[in-house]
Image (cartoon, rainbow, N blue to C red; front, side, top):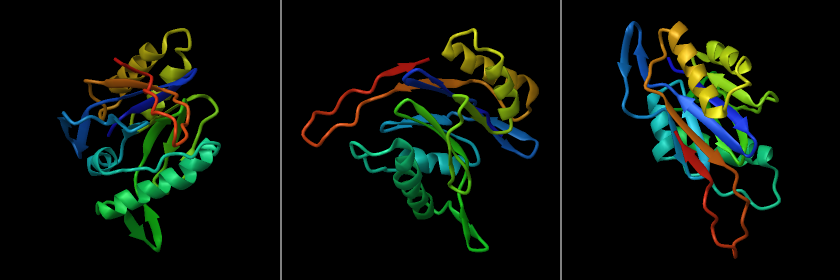
Length: 197
């Protein structure tokens, strides 16, 4: 099931997702979104709606310390918070002493990360990524649509995935977050730069 698409555009990260819930040959168009914000993070998930619900409503990630590396923060602090969240919520699985979760995209501080089921963190050089059963179609559409705006590219990728994949369905939710500077403890919180489609 699912197509989640992410795209970096300057200091913003765009993300879109479909609404399909698939079980075998049955499909349900879901009201609960696969793309949502949790603090400074824009998250889009596949794998399981239970996992997505935990990431949306239970996940709490400590703030990144000023002067620390963003990728290192995602690998260490963010992923550890995700592991704890999924374990405490009864979702994480353990097989042959290896722990696994699910797959999702994260937009954070103008960068796009893919978190895999083994909790590895991937950041593609190309500046866009897609996950779910419609990912290959979406990636092709993203690669071929560099001449249009970011929101339109996301929508086009999802529409192409819906055309060719039986596990992808509109309506599509598209959102965007921008960067925000890390603040010291004495500085006031700065508003998040956002745009909603």
